[in-house]
Image 1 (cartoon, rainbow, N blue to C red):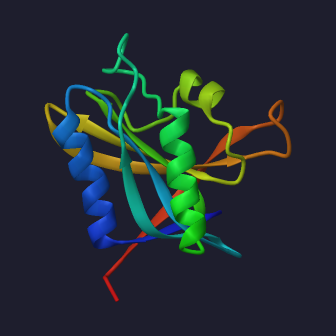
Image 2: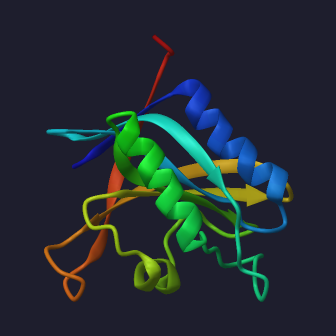
Length: 148
């Protein structure tokens, strides 16, 4: 099983973002380095949710914003480790929409449940598979480490 490693401050910032945007979904990108066992996340970058039709249960990061995030990551010698979003008043499990809209194979997708404005459970799923047609989400362990 793959492991997503991140520091406690990054983990807490992802969960806080979900609380701040409640009752809408938050979203952002995770930057880091790939390891043999999964990603080591060194930054969480907040992004704007551009969904105006159903921001309470969908998210979208504008392509221009994503390009900027990826360029900034590359300048720092980092890669896109994955993405995060919240599920307001919904379990922290991927939906069919999450799967159909996920395209970054080998990246982690972190989902935090936010119940009545309070972050509860956070899960991570690795987008596995060799092609778009074979893609699937595999449960991933989250290892929250103390800051070094």
